[in-house]
Length: 414
Ligand code: FE2
Image (cartoon, rainbow, N blue to C red; front, top):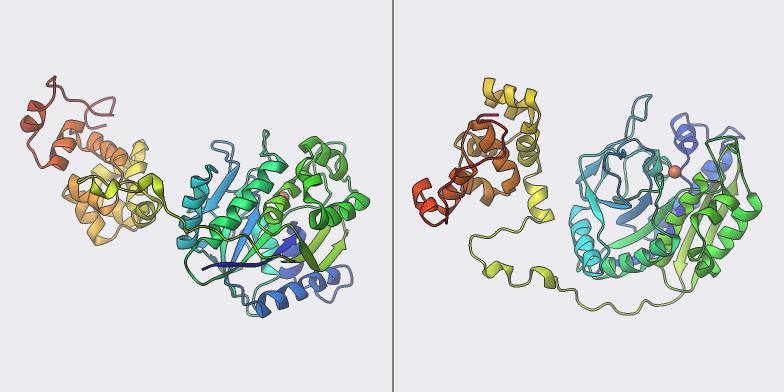
Protein backbone atom coordinates (compact mmCIF):
# COMPACT_ATOMS: atom_id res chain seq x y z
CA UNK A 1 0.00 0.00 0.00
CA UNK A 2 1.07 3.60 -0.49
CA UNK A 3 2.52 5.35 2.59
CA UNK A 4 2.71 9.01 3.58
CA UNK A 5 6.26 9.38 4.81
CA UNK A 6 6.03 13.03 5.80
CA UNK A 7 5.52 16.51 4.44
CA UNK A 8 7.34 19.54 3.18
CA UNK A 9 6.16 23.11 3.36
CA UNK A 10 7.71 25.81 1.22
CA UNK A 11 7.08 29.27 -0.15
CA UNK A 12 6.81 29.38 -3.94
CA UNK A 13 7.99 32.85 -4.86
CA UNK A 14 9.42 33.29 -8.40
CA UNK A 15 12.64 34.51 -6.74
CA UNK A 16 13.48 30.92 -5.75
CA UNK A 17 13.51 29.79 -9.40
CA UNK A 18 15.30 33.01 -10.39
CA UNK A 19 18.13 32.29 -7.91
CA UNK A 20 18.38 28.67 -9.07
CA UNK A 21 18.51 29.49 -12.79
CA UNK A 22 21.21 32.13 -12.28
CA UNK A 23 23.22 29.83 -9.99
CA UNK A 24 23.35 32.43 -7.23
CA UNK A 25 24.23 29.90 -4.53
CA UNK A 26 27.39 31.75 -3.51
CA UNK A 27 25.82 35.21 -3.49
CA UNK A 28 25.28 36.19 0.18
CA UNK A 29 21.82 37.63 -0.65
CA UNK A 30 20.62 34.37 -2.20
CA UNK A 31 22.63 31.76 -0.29
CA UNK A 32 20.09 31.42 2.58
CA UNK A 33 17.53 30.20 0.04
CA UNK A 34 19.85 27.46 -1.22
CA UNK A 35 20.78 26.54 2.37
CA UNK A 36 17.10 26.14 3.20
CA UNK A 37 16.52 23.50 0.52
CA UNK A 38 19.66 21.37 0.96
CA UNK A 39 18.32 19.47 4.03
CA UNK A 40 14.99 18.90 2.25
CA UNK A 41 16.74 17.37 -0.76
CA UNK A 42 18.74 15.11 1.57
CA UNK A 43 15.61 14.09 3.52
CA UNK A 44 13.72 13.20 0.32
CA UNK A 45 16.63 11.04 -0.83
CA UNK A 46 17.00 9.34 2.55
CA UNK A 47 13.27 8.60 2.72
CA UNK A 48 13.22 7.33 -0.87
CA UNK A 49 10.32 9.51 -1.90
CA UNK A 50 8.51 8.23 -5.00
CA UNK A 51 5.77 10.82 -5.46
CA UNK A 52 5.41 14.41 -4.27
CA UNK A 53 1.75 15.38 -3.98
CA UNK A 54 2.31 19.07 -4.55
CA UNK A 55 -0.33 21.58 -3.46
CA UNK A 56 0.10 24.90 -5.23
CA UNK A 57 -1.79 27.72 -6.84
CA UNK A 58 -1.51 28.87 -10.41
CA UNK A 59 -1.01 32.64 -10.84
CA UNK A 60 -3.49 33.23 -13.68
CA UNK A 61 -1.08 31.54 -16.07
CA UNK A 62 -2.74 28.25 -17.03
CA UNK A 63 -6.00 28.66 -15.06
CA UNK A 64 -8.04 31.69 -16.14
CA UNK A 65 -11.42 33.00 -15.02
CA UNK A 66 -13.28 31.34 -17.90
CA UNK A 67 -13.43 28.24 -15.69
CA UNK A 68 -12.03 28.65 -12.21
CA UNK A 69 -12.02 25.66 -9.84
CA UNK A 70 -11.30 25.51 -6.10
CA UNK A 71 -9.43 22.19 -6.31
CA UNK A 72 -8.01 20.78 -9.57
CA UNK A 73 -5.96 17.57 -9.55
CA UNK A 74 -3.44 16.95 -12.34
CA UNK A 75 -4.10 13.64 -14.11
CA UNK A 76 -1.48 14.06 -16.83
CA UNK A 77 1.63 12.02 -17.65
CA UNK A 78 3.89 15.06 -17.39
CA UNK A 79 3.85 18.81 -16.66
CA UNK A 80 5.76 21.38 -18.69
CA UNK A 81 7.04 24.63 -17.19
CA UNK A 82 4.73 27.51 -18.10
CA UNK A 83 5.65 30.63 -20.03
CA UNK A 84 4.66 33.42 -17.64
CA UNK A 85 5.42 36.23 -20.04
CA UNK A 86 9.19 36.03 -20.46
CA UNK A 87 9.59 32.52 -21.87
CA UNK A 88 9.42 29.18 -20.07
CA UNK A 89 12.25 28.15 -17.73
CA UNK A 90 14.75 25.68 -19.10
CA UNK A 91 13.81 22.78 -16.82
CA UNK A 92 12.67 19.31 -17.92
CA UNK A 93 8.99 18.37 -17.66
CA UNK A 94 7.92 17.01 -14.29
CA UNK A 95 6.79 13.37 -14.62
CA UNK A 96 3.22 12.81 -13.42
CA UNK A 97 1.58 9.92 -11.58
CA UNK A 98 -1.70 9.46 -13.47
CA UNK A 99 -2.69 6.05 -12.04
CA UNK A 100 -2.32 7.32 -8.48
CA UNK A 101 -4.19 10.50 -9.43
CA UNK A 102 -7.16 8.53 -10.77
CA UNK A 103 -7.31 6.35 -7.69
CA UNK A 104 -7.16 9.34 -5.36
CA UNK A 105 -9.85 11.09 -7.40
CA UNK A 106 -12.27 8.18 -7.04
CA UNK A 107 -11.65 7.97 -3.29
CA UNK A 108 -12.12 11.72 -2.84
CA UNK A 109 -15.43 11.68 -4.70
CA UNK A 110 -16.58 8.80 -2.49
CA UNK A 111 -15.93 11.16 0.46
CA UNK A 112 -17.93 13.87 -1.36
CA UNK A 113 -14.92 16.03 -2.26
CA UNK A 114 -15.93 16.71 -5.87
CA UNK A 115 -12.67 18.10 -7.22
CA UNK A 116 -11.91 18.90 -10.86
CA UNK A 117 -9.12 17.55 -13.08
CA UNK A 118 -6.61 19.01 -15.48
CA UNK A 119 -4.28 17.83 -18.22
CA UNK A 120 -2.51 19.47 -21.11
CA UNK A 121 -1.76 22.50 -18.93
CA UNK A 122 1.67 23.87 -18.14
CA UNK A 123 2.54 24.55 -14.52
CA UNK A 124 3.82 27.92 -13.29
CA UNK A 125 6.24 29.08 -10.58
CA UNK A 126 3.76 28.10 -7.86
CA UNK A 127 4.88 24.53 -8.44
CA UNK A 128 8.18 24.67 -10.34
CA UNK A 129 9.93 27.36 -8.30
CA UNK A 130 10.48 25.38 -5.06
CA UNK A 131 10.63 21.96 -6.76
CA UNK A 132 13.50 23.05 -9.00
CA UNK A 133 15.57 23.53 -5.80
CA UNK A 134 15.01 19.84 -5.06
CA UNK A 135 16.00 18.46 -8.49
CA UNK A 136 19.03 16.22 -9.12
CA UNK A 137 22.30 18.08 -9.78
CA UNK A 138 21.85 17.43 -13.53
CA UNK A 139 18.37 19.00 -13.41
CA UNK A 140 16.43 15.73 -13.75
CA UNK A 141 13.71 14.81 -11.26
CA UNK A 142 14.22 12.09 -8.62
CA UNK A 143 10.44 11.54 -8.17
CA UNK A 144 7.07 11.94 -9.84
CA UNK A 145 4.59 14.61 -8.88
CA UNK A 146 0.88 14.81 -8.37
CA UNK A 147 -0.09 18.49 -8.62
CA UNK A 148 -3.15 19.77 -6.78
CA UNK A 149 -3.99 23.28 -7.95
CA UNK A 150 -6.00 25.37 -5.50
CA UNK A 151 -7.90 28.39 -6.78
CA UNK A 152 -7.00 31.04 -4.20
CA UNK A 153 -7.17 34.14 -6.39
CA UNK A 154 -10.89 34.69 -7.06
CA UNK A 155 -13.35 34.82 -4.18
CA UNK A 156 -15.16 32.88 -2.89
CA UNK A 157 -12.25 30.61 -1.92
CA UNK A 158 -12.40 27.31 -0.07
CA UNK A 159 -12.33 27.96 3.67
CA UNK A 160 -9.27 27.07 5.71
CA UNK A 161 -11.45 24.44 7.40
CA UNK A 162 -12.37 22.92 4.03
CA UNK A 163 -8.69 22.71 3.11
CA UNK A 164 -7.91 21.00 6.43
CA UNK A 165 -10.69 18.46 5.85
CA UNK A 166 -9.56 17.83 2.29
CA UNK A 167 -6.14 16.92 3.69
CA UNK A 168 -7.72 14.19 5.81
CA UNK A 169 -9.58 12.79 2.79
CA UNK A 170 -6.38 12.93 0.71
CA UNK A 171 -4.51 11.01 3.38
CA UNK A 172 -7.11 8.23 3.35
CA UNK A 173 -7.19 8.20 -0.46
CA UNK A 174 -3.39 7.87 -0.71
CA UNK A 175 -3.19 5.15 1.92
CA UNK A 176 -5.96 3.17 0.19
CA UNK A 177 -3.89 3.00 -3.02
CA UNK A 178 -2.77 -0.64 -3.33
CA UNK A 179 0.71 0.01 -4.68
CA UNK A 180 3.91 0.18 -2.64
CA UNK A 181 4.83 3.89 -2.89
CA UNK A 182 6.41 6.50 -0.63
CA UNK A 183 4.35 9.67 -0.90
CA UNK A 184 5.34 13.10 0.44
CA UNK A 185 2.80 15.91 0.81
CA UNK A 186 4.23 19.24 -0.35
CA UNK A 187 2.45 22.45 0.63
CA UNK A 188 3.53 25.62 -1.15
CA UNK A 189 2.74 29.29 -0.78
CA UNK A 190 3.30 32.24 1.54
CA UNK A 191 4.27 33.31 3.95
CA UNK A 192 3.20 36.92 4.58
CA UNK A 193 3.01 39.15 1.52
CA UNK A 194 0.78 41.45 -0.42
CA UNK A 195 1.51 42.33 -4.04
CA UNK A 196 -1.38 44.61 -5.00
CA UNK A 197 -2.78 47.99 -4.03
CA UNK A 198 -1.48 50.61 -1.63
CA UNK A 199 -0.85 47.91 1.00
CA UNK A 200 1.55 46.23 -1.42
CA UNK A 201 4.78 45.25 0.38
CA UNK A 202 3.02 44.34 3.62
CA UNK A 203 4.87 41.69 5.69
CA UNK A 204 4.42 40.43 9.24
CA UNK A 205 7.38 38.32 10.45
CA UNK A 206 5.87 38.01 13.93
CA UNK A 207 2.69 36.44 12.53
CA UNK A 208 4.75 34.23 10.21
CA UNK A 209 6.52 32.72 13.23
CA UNK A 210 3.19 32.20 15.02
CA UNK A 211 1.81 30.55 11.89
CA UNK A 212 4.79 28.19 11.73
CA UNK A 213 4.23 27.29 15.40
CA UNK A 214 0.49 26.79 15.00
CA UNK A 215 0.69 24.64 11.87
CA UNK A 216 2.69 22.17 13.94
CA UNK A 217 1.01 22.38 17.33
CA UNK A 218 -2.53 23.72 16.91
CA UNK A 219 -3.84 23.67 13.32
CA UNK A 220 -7.41 23.93 14.66
CA UNK A 221 -6.74 27.62 15.38
CA UNK A 222 -5.66 28.11 11.76
CA UNK A 223 -8.62 26.12 10.41
CA UNK A 224 -11.02 28.45 12.27
CA UNK A 225 -9.58 31.64 10.73
CA UNK A 226 -11.38 33.50 7.93
CA UNK A 227 -9.75 34.75 4.76
CA UNK A 228 -9.99 38.27 6.20
CA UNK A 229 -8.13 37.10 9.33
CA UNK A 230 -5.36 35.75 7.10
CA UNK A 231 -5.28 38.93 4.99
CA UNK A 232 -5.09 41.15 8.07
CA UNK A 233 -2.23 39.18 9.65
CA UNK A 234 -0.28 38.08 6.56
CA UNK A 235 -1.40 40.25 3.62
CA UNK A 236 -4.07 39.49 1.00
CA UNK A 237 -1.94 37.22 -1.19
CA UNK A 238 -0.43 35.69 1.97
CA UNK A 239 -3.86 34.10 2.50
CA UNK A 240 -2.67 31.40 0.09
CA UNK A 241 -1.20 29.70 3.18
CA UNK A 242 -4.60 28.04 3.59
CA UNK A 243 -3.00 25.51 1.20
CA UNK A 244 -0.69 24.47 4.05
CA UNK A 245 -3.77 23.24 5.91
CA UNK A 246 -4.39 20.63 3.21
CA UNK A 247 -0.90 19.28 3.92
CA UNK A 248 -1.45 19.48 7.69
CA UNK A 249 -4.77 17.65 7.43
CA UNK A 250 -3.01 14.79 5.63
CA UNK A 251 -0.69 14.22 8.63
CA UNK A 252 -1.48 12.72 12.01
CA UNK A 253 -2.63 14.95 14.90
CA UNK A 254 0.83 14.96 16.47
CA UNK A 255 3.77 15.74 14.21
CA UNK A 256 7.37 16.84 14.69
CA UNK A 257 9.28 19.50 12.81
CA UNK A 258 12.62 18.28 11.46
CA UNK A 259 13.62 21.47 9.70
CA UNK A 260 12.37 25.06 9.71
CA UNK A 261 13.79 28.15 8.01
CA UNK A 262 12.57 31.70 7.48
CA UNK A 263 14.04 34.42 5.26
CA UNK A 264 12.58 37.72 4.08
CA UNK A 265 14.77 39.16 1.31
CA UNK A 266 12.21 41.27 -0.52
CA UNK A 267 8.42 41.06 -0.89
CA UNK A 268 7.51 37.58 0.35
CA UNK A 269 8.64 35.76 3.46
CA UNK A 270 10.33 32.54 2.30
CA UNK A 271 9.80 29.68 4.73
CA UNK A 272 10.63 25.98 4.43
CA UNK A 273 9.86 23.06 6.73
CA UNK A 274 9.93 19.28 6.97
CA UNK A 275 7.35 17.43 9.07
CA UNK A 276 7.05 13.80 10.09
CA UNK A 277 4.16 12.04 11.81
CA UNK A 278 4.47 11.29 15.52
CA UNK A 279 1.59 8.79 15.54
CA UNK A 280 0.27 5.91 13.48
CA UNK A 281 -2.67 6.61 11.19
CA UNK A 282 -5.98 4.90 11.86
CA UNK A 283 -6.32 2.00 9.40
CA UNK A 284 -8.19 2.78 6.19
CA UNK A 285 -10.83 0.30 5.00
CA UNK A 286 -10.31 -1.40 1.65
CA UNK A 287 -11.77 1.02 -0.88
CA UNK A 288 -14.61 -0.09 -3.16
CA UNK A 289 -15.99 2.16 -5.84
CA UNK A 290 -19.65 1.53 -5.05
CA UNK A 291 -20.91 4.11 -7.53
CA UNK A 292 -19.96 2.04 -10.57
CA UNK A 293 -20.31 -1.39 -9.02
CA UNK A 294 -22.51 -3.51 -11.28
CA UNK A 295 -22.38 -1.17 -14.27
CA UNK A 296 -20.36 -3.77 -16.17
CA UNK A 297 -23.57 -5.84 -16.42
CA UNK A 298 -25.16 -3.18 -18.65
CA UNK A 299 -24.14 -4.39 -22.09
CA UNK A 300 -23.39 -1.74 -24.70
CA UNK A 301 -22.61 0.78 -21.92
CA UNK A 302 -19.22 2.48 -21.50
CA UNK A 303 -18.94 4.91 -18.56
CA UNK A 304 -16.67 7.79 -19.53
CA UNK A 305 -13.99 7.44 -16.86
CA UNK A 306 -10.67 9.19 -16.30
CA UNK A 307 -9.02 6.07 -17.79
CA UNK A 308 -11.01 6.43 -21.03
CA UNK A 309 -10.39 10.16 -21.00
CA UNK A 310 -6.62 9.61 -20.72
CA UNK A 311 -6.55 7.00 -23.50
CA UNK A 312 -8.65 8.97 -25.99
CA UNK A 313 -7.70 12.52 -25.02
CA UNK A 314 -6.10 13.42 -28.37
CA UNK A 315 -8.97 12.24 -30.54
CA UNK A 316 -11.59 13.73 -28.23
CA UNK A 317 -9.68 17.04 -28.37
CA UNK A 318 -9.53 16.86 -32.16
CA UNK A 319 -13.26 16.20 -32.48
CA UNK A 320 -14.12 18.78 -29.84
CA UNK A 321 -12.21 21.45 -31.75
CA UNK A 322 -14.58 21.07 -34.70
CA UNK A 323 -16.65 23.66 -32.79
CA UNK A 324 -14.15 26.21 -34.21
CA UNK A 325 -15.26 27.29 -37.72
CA UNK A 326 -11.65 27.43 -39.06
CA UNK A 327 -10.98 23.85 -37.89
CA UNK A 328 -14.16 22.65 -39.57
CA UNK A 329 -13.03 24.26 -42.79
CA UNK A 330 -9.56 22.73 -42.45
CA UNK A 331 -11.19 19.35 -41.83
CA UNK A 332 -13.27 19.66 -45.01
CA UNK A 333 -10.26 20.78 -47.04
CA UNK A 334 -7.84 18.10 -45.86
CA UNK A 335 -8.94 15.89 -42.95
CA UNK A 336 -5.73 13.84 -42.97
CA UNK A 337 -3.56 16.94 -42.64
CA UNK A 338 -5.61 18.24 -39.70
CA UNK A 339 -5.56 14.84 -38.00
CA UNK A 340 -1.80 14.64 -38.28
CA UNK A 341 -1.55 18.13 -36.78
CA UNK A 342 -3.45 16.76 -33.77
CA UNK A 343 -1.07 13.75 -33.60
CA UNK A 344 -3.85 11.21 -34.08
CA UNK A 345 -2.56 7.66 -34.43
CA UNK A 346 -3.25 5.80 -37.67
CA UNK A 347 -5.90 3.77 -35.83
CA UNK A 348 -7.63 6.94 -34.61
CA UNK A 349 -7.47 8.62 -38.01
CA UNK A 350 -8.90 5.50 -39.62
CA UNK A 351 -11.87 5.47 -37.21
CA UNK A 352 -12.64 9.10 -38.08
CA UNK A 353 -12.18 8.56 -41.82
CA UNK A 354 -14.58 5.60 -41.81
CA UNK A 355 -17.07 7.42 -39.51
CA UNK A 356 -17.25 4.19 -37.54
CA UNK A 357 -19.46 5.57 -34.78
CA UNK A 358 -19.65 2.37 -32.78
CA UNK A 359 -15.90 1.71 -32.92
CA UNK A 360 -15.22 5.31 -31.95
CA UNK A 361 -17.27 4.80 -28.78
CA UNK A 362 -15.47 1.51 -28.09
CA UNK A 363 -12.16 3.30 -28.50
CA UNK A 364 -12.98 5.88 -25.83
CA UNK A 365 -14.52 8.79 -27.71
CA UNK A 366 -17.38 10.46 -25.85
CA UNK A 367 -20.69 10.68 -27.71
CA UNK A 368 -20.89 14.48 -27.35
CA UNK A 369 -17.99 15.05 -29.71
CA UNK A 370 -19.38 12.49 -32.15
CA UNK A 371 -22.47 14.64 -32.57
CA UNK A 372 -20.16 17.52 -33.48
CA UNK A 373 -18.49 15.40 -36.15
CA UNK A 374 -21.94 14.32 -37.35
CA UNK A 375 -22.95 17.98 -37.69
CA UNK A 376 -19.80 18.68 -39.74
CA UNK A 377 -20.23 15.75 -42.11
CA UNK A 378 -23.95 16.45 -42.44
CA UNK A 379 -25.61 13.45 -40.85
CA UNK A 380 -28.21 13.60 -38.10
CA UNK A 381 -27.83 12.34 -34.55
CA UNK A 382 -30.30 9.60 -35.47
CA UNK A 383 -27.81 8.22 -38.01
CA UNK A 384 -25.20 7.96 -35.26
CA UNK A 385 -27.61 6.34 -32.80
CA UNK A 386 -28.70 3.80 -35.42
CA UNK A 387 -25.09 2.96 -36.34
CA UNK A 388 -24.14 2.43 -32.69
CA UNK A 389 -27.13 0.07 -32.30
CA UNK A 390 -26.18 -1.76 -35.51
CA UNK A 391 -29.42 -0.75 -37.24
CA UNK A 392 -30.49 1.21 -40.29
CA UNK A 393 -32.00 4.64 -39.74
CA UNK A 394 -35.44 3.27 -40.59
CA UNK A 395 -35.07 0.40 -38.13
CA UNK A 396 -34.17 2.81 -35.34
CA UNK A 397 -36.97 5.20 -36.24
CA UNK A 398 -39.45 2.34 -36.07
CA UNK A 399 -38.60 2.00 -32.36
CA UNK A 400 -39.38 5.70 -31.60
CA UNK A 401 -42.75 7.38 -31.02
CA UNK A 402 -42.06 10.00 -33.69
CA UNK A 403 -40.13 9.74 -36.94
CA UNK A 404 -37.82 12.76 -36.71
CA UNK A 405 -34.19 13.61 -37.40
CA UNK A 406 -32.06 16.28 -35.73
CA UNK A 407 -28.48 17.30 -35.01
CA UNK A 408 -26.56 19.90 -32.99
CA UNK A 409 -25.61 22.09 -35.97
CA UNK A 410 -27.50 25.29 -36.79
CA UNK A 411 -27.40 24.12 -40.39
CA UNK A 412 -26.58 20.86 -42.12
CA UNK A 413 -22.87 20.40 -42.70
CA UNK A 414 -21.98 23.17 -40.22
FE1 FE2 B 1 1.19 32.05 -4.90
